Picture (cartoon, rainbow over the protein chains, first blue to last red):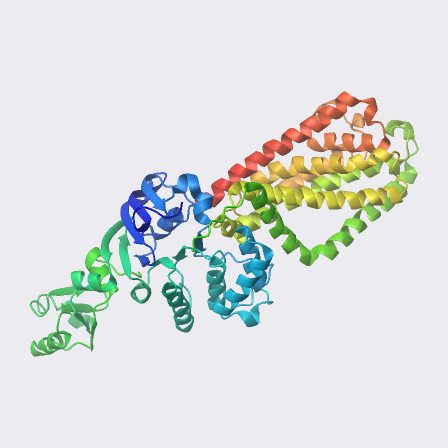
Length: 312
Length: 266
């Protein structure tokens, strides 16, 4: 019953979500293949969470078509959810229970018997590097530990698809890298990952393929590398000018790069050879306070597509 | 990896109940102790202490004040416990710990969450009212063996409150309005629904008002069973049971609706 005739595990066409007059998701199309890790990249309010909640069968669709593992969320919600793992934006852990009890009771929600759920809980504590904290209360745990516990909890039913909504938002860099490492292991085990993020580095680290969302719509789709190739140059030269010099720049950078982007705090030169662009700036007698040549990222893709930064 | 686990609804309700039981284990002893202590104090102070000044037993059915009061307190206690259990734990699951949202990400449905929590409240009330009834018997305040049936009667009384109040609690984002319920709903009912004195002593207009309150029916039913006079008024008893049942059932189905709406909203 679960196998679908098409290869896609999640299939959406014209998928729409409205709250009254407000359109949170506006006729988006996407497919997620088995074993893939797929991302929704976009700023806050782009419609990523609304899309995830529809996939998670906790928010009914307003229009279009959505199938998850070949089933219809409107009629098969509980059966679909039985095979999903969900890491929501807010952990929703039970502070009245211990770390291990949180896993055990969650496994019971899926109807797993006590022996099986105990075995899986111990395994997942190990995976989430929380074995030493098994019998502690949840509250004193750090943000990164709570997040790892939430991920462990989402795996208790051995899901086919793991949905992660902003998995590392609010975590410090070390905690993020630890989490990414765990998610990468899951990906290698063949778990299909679907995540939302507004961090371009996270999308680049974890996603085989992603869609860029802005204002309820999908504005681009592809692998991180393909998107960068399509919408940006190989390199970017970032220039920072003193405030008075920044005002008298008009036209003086023309022709140096394929594209020039003026941001409030800096100027971006999009060129395949960033060093050459930096040299050309100096030859024109301009003296920026700092020059940084870097590779293009998804941030540049987003800027190109929407004219705005990912994080405001 | 694609194991199909789609538990039947009855067992899904059981899982929600199991969650409440797991969290209850931590406060179990303190809870049992206060369930004993509270009726002991009330019956000693009001039934025996205050009751000594009640000189006219004819107005209260020719029994001692203690015997009159005990079943009324039993029903009123069920009301109070049910009201508490239907407010804070519901808003906690939806707003504070968000555990209901975590449950909804599994095969458990809003209906299971509503029924699981109401079933838990019914279980809590059974425990509390059983302990209360044992205390009544120990005080020698039970006039008839049919007091055993006062336990389910008191539980039903509590559920007539738990259903509608849980339905309301699921619409709230903060507990601010709960104090309004307790101050202007539960406390006046506790005082004026026949728990401490028969409503026949109230002015006529208030008697009519009292008749419409669920606690009046709960007290009347519980008291008749404790005094062993229920069989004398079968129609009145049926009306009490029907009135309380309708409130519990309507409240329960409204709770499914309001919890569902809240979970879908996110």
